[in-house]
Amino acid sequence: QVQLVESGGGLVQAGGSLRLSCAASGRTFSISTMGWFRQAPGKEREFVAHIMWSGGNTYYADSVKGRFTISRDNAKNTVYLQMNSLKSEDTAVYYCAAAQYYRGSHVRPDGYDYWGQGTQVTVSS
Image (tube, rainbow, N blue to C red):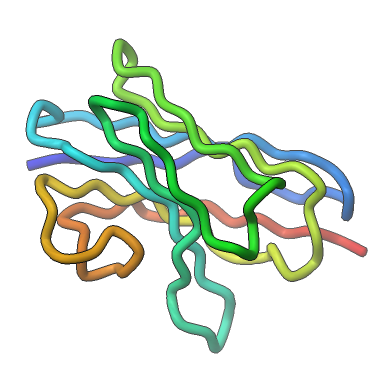
């Protein structure tokens, strides 16, 4: 079992920055990929970014490319999402997810095995 806990959400002004953290515990040795998703009210859960735990390769949704950066600290079993140039449309609950192995997709929610509780990000304009 893997437990994921997000933190760092809050209220930020448009154009500002915020850094989210996701701390993993439990059977973290089984994690191959970690990702960030977000979900706004009335919308589907949307892929944001993912990172390979071992190699550090990253991939971003077009909507956040150039503004967001995903990174990891393997020693701390933690992944981060640095969000810059925030827009009102970035307002959502942000979820951290972990995949044990490749299940067909790392840009879809069903490609992940474990999820955090989510952290609210609100961007004011």
